[in-house]
Image 1 (cartoon, helix red, strand yellow):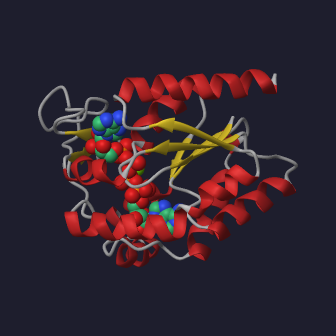
Image 2 (cartoon, protein in one colour):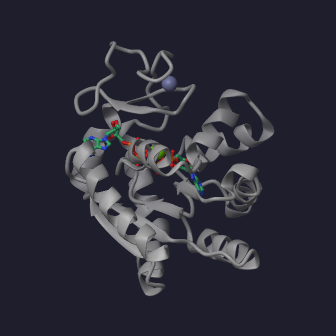
Length: 220
Ligand code: AP5
Ligand code: MG
Ligand code: ZN
């Protein structure tokens, strides 16, 4: 399966990506996680990306496109992949399409996790993330089993630097102007599928499995 996840900040892309990636045995590729890892390791990429991410702006297309294309060349992407947070602009979407075309491949679906603005601030300000494995929690909606410790790897969970209320507002504006047009873009290509992201985490996953199961059986 070759899947991209669409949805506003806080829609639950990262949360659902972990489960989808396990179920379909495809790598979960999150551009946000790649940037954050580089930021914590203070690489040149991390230093450049940080200046945009801290302001809630997008990292420039050229840089982002190259990183994703390198990652998609890895052996583990042979049988598919799950992209979380990419593409985020029409040029990134076009670059992905051309990249796959050249290999005679195409996306199976662009899966939109649909969540209205009203839910977002609450979700983001209560979010805690694992700096080591990328798992995402919420102090009320999805708490860790042991307070402050990641369920998967035991590391101390932290708050993301861009999860302040004012940066979240900027990220939402950026989403609306630059990323939301991709919904129409993929709808026009007959690739869009949508799930209601305001349900419980388990119910969203059930809907996703329904959508992906139907696409998978069409392919076989
Ligand atoms: P990125 O890390 O991708 O951030 P984002 O898109 O803003 O999305 P989030 O990770 O904030 O939300 P999510 O949908 O993954 O939600 P989560 O599952 O954690 O990008 C960060 C930055 O990097 C960007 O701003 C940009 O600067 C840069 N960047 C990244 N990709 C780029 C690209 N392609 N081009 C250019 N720049 C790029 O859930 C959120 C919270 O809600 C959690 O606490 C979770 O527990 C909770 N939750 C999840 N689902 C539910 C539910 N159903 N009910 C209740 N709570 C829930
Ligand atoms: Mg995420
Ligand atoms: Zn962890």
